[in-house]
Image (cartoon, rainbow, N blue to C red; front, side, top):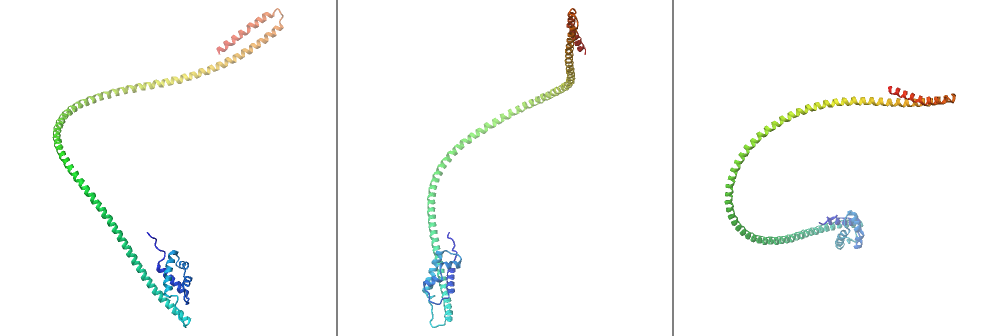
Length: 320
């Protein structure tokens, strides 16, 4: 789709005529004078938009009409300048109006031509479209004729198949009747078997209920017995716990007594050692003071006396 023009030809024409009217030069003008008064740059600056190529094309057309028509070449001899300027302005306005009408008629003719061209083009497109649709319709008709022929052949085959199916249906109906009779016999036999199974099930159900009640009573008795045994076991466990606590207490007391005895034995060992050392010192001193004849009995006495004291000390420790 083409983009709309920024300015219209009427606006371009009106702007060009306004620039010529603003110039106010009564001297005859040529093409150079027209180009000096009106240019593409001035026209685009006055309009504020427009394609330079489009403006140049319209400007050339307006220049040919204005300059060749003698818009800028009008001159009246021996006329005062003020009157000549007024006559010139009046004449320019009349010519501009005439040119505007001519251009409007030309624009209308161009619009009519464009409309006619568009209508002709649209008619050609419609004709081509109708031709394409006609070709499609002919192809569709040909395809439908082929499909119709195929459907006729298929219909004949289906008719023959339907006759074969009808004969098969008759045979199946006969077989269905026989099957229904067999099914009725089987249903009666099944009903009799079902009645017998229901009676057997009811007997088994009653027996199961009796056995369940008996097992429930047995379970209740066993539960009560287990609860009593559990209570007795709890009592025994409590007694064992108390015995364990008492034995632990006694064991602690025995451990303390053993530790105390060990401490006392260590103390007695130290005392005995000290006494032995003291006796050894006393024996040595006595030996030095006594004569040689009396030394041996003293030594023997010294040798025998400490063990007796040690034994006495040990007996005393055990008694403690």
